[in-house]
Length: 355
Image: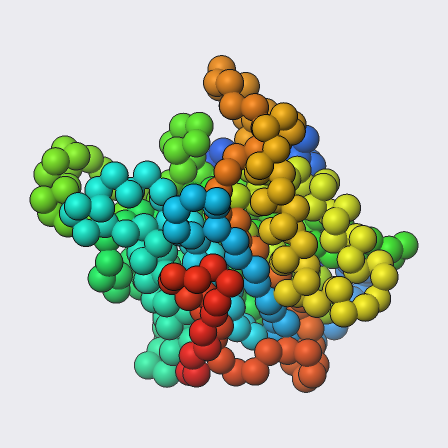
């Protein structure tokens, strides 16, 4: 019995999936979402391999790229960042334009959160050994730091991810999110892990909010979501895995299996098309096209019917995807030591910062 118990522990550790379920969240946004068995882990330890698994440190990095597009009308309120060790997306809440007279700007707030989270993740010089933490805890601290440091007003969902060794940690608040895909031995990709949406009610996601005191008094001083309400994740990765971070403009318009089919078409024919930028762009373009289709059967329209609302077709929205291949430390594909951040006023533009 003891031997069996030890073997079970190793199997779980090899799969490397761990989650903090301290918050209440909804499950996959549509009925067609896959039910992951053993979290889709491709590798399970055999007897006698326990020591090798625990004693073989692996240094992995991210080869990342992004694409973002705005809805046909209005400014783009999505923001992102990525580097060789971390990535994030934020989706500013469009309805905050109703409070523009108070100085509220959801696009600026989302960009503010990304700048704050990326800065917190890439400046660890003051962190002592006693304060050293897992990548899951680091992303939670980064979200909290971004929330505390924000100087603009608005509301936004947020997803932040970081890699350390062969572990990835993530914190997600709201209905943006991430996916982990892994190559199948016979070709194509499979879904290994995915964040869950957090919603108070249908189409009302958890969100960080910062508003001036005058506006807070007007809306009645209602309780706001905090960084501590986010759901945290920890899982293992291996070379060849693909991480996707996205805003809900993607998942409201494309089913998970449509995304996999599209990615398979790109990666099964080795070429420049399989770069992270190309993958991100292909997903964004497909989602944007679907968002304009008034008769399409989309995840958003299906969810609307479940809540007795008639919202046929796609959902017009900003769409942002950050795609990142997991590569060995010395891989020439890895991005240089710097941070790429989206620009506030141009969805196609980005800027780079050195840390």
